[in-house]
Image (cartoon, rainbow, N blue to C red; front, side, top):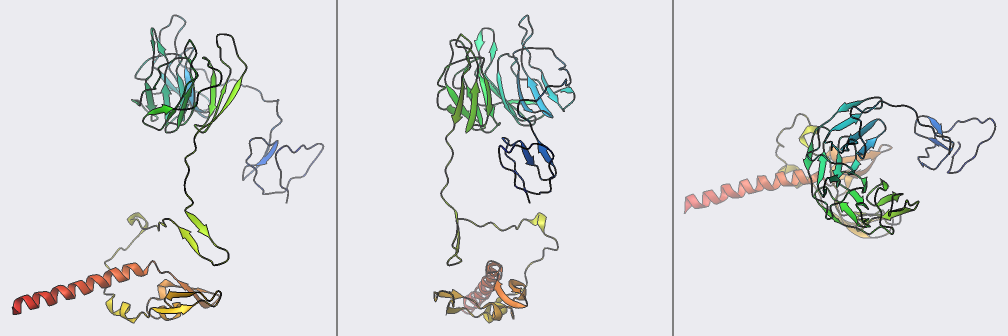
Amino acid sequence: MANFQNGITITGSFDLSATTENTSSAGYLWFDGTNFKYSILGTGTWSTGGALIQCRSDLAGAGTQNAGLAFGGRTYSQTYFSCTEEYDGSSWSAGGALITAREKLAGAGTQDAAISFGGYDDPNYLSCTEEYNGTSWAAGGALITGRQGLAGAGTQNAGLAFGGSWPSYSCTEEYDGSSWSAGGALITARAGLGGAGTQTEGLAFGGFTPSRVLCTEEYTGAYETFSKTFDYSDTTGETTVSCLIETSAARYKDNIQPMGSQLNKVMQLQPVEFDWKSNKKHDIGFVADSVKNVYPNLVSEKDGQVEGMNYSKLVSALVKSIQEQQTQIDELKARLDNNN
């Protein structure tokens, strides 16, 4: 089986018979799970796509090649547009109009979950943010600094805005789906730049200061850190998790019925103390072999032998038993009250 890594160079003829996946965007040859694909750097070409419905400049966009979004912009005579168009890989169709018509705005996200922010409608530098749901735009949280000619990256709930206006800004802002907060400043303040990437791995390139610039900058956002919540010990077999969720929603179940009496069954269970043979560690619990006589559906087998049991499923039986006992207690209390 072949394993193709980044940077492999193939000359002449070759035979491919592999199922190894390499999803790296830097590779010349990779497997997408179904087909082998190859890319020769520097030989990409543009082909004609469908024309916009509305001719305009200084607009913004979001999405992908087969699910694109275009919004805002202006005519040569500085008529500002609010129109939105959606691209399906071959043609554009009308989408919901922006709330605020404007030019030199920025965008991020997807065709069904986009954001537009900043821009200009003479004489105002705008701070407004709008969120698109695939049909219409709704107001979002305003930028801290209103500006035009900025760039954007990320998604609707994790957006990035940087640069823009004149004189040029270096400020960066991060969007969480409702409000913007300050991020790290660009090294080179500039407007009219381009942007790409995500909120935590952004890219800024080009622009003017007022001279044209070639510089590219890479943004590393503040990653949210989490404490370790899962641990497995090869030595002891112990697994530690902070929370274990078992599928239990009604939509996954049929024939839901109240549980019958469990008190007599629970009374047959035999809690024990024991030592594990593997490590001599003292422990408490049940012996699955005896539990099988009472709750066979809770016991698992391997190669025809009892292997273990599902402890969590006992909870429902224990709850039912407590309820039964409480009913008995309530009945006894009622008898005592009547006798008194």
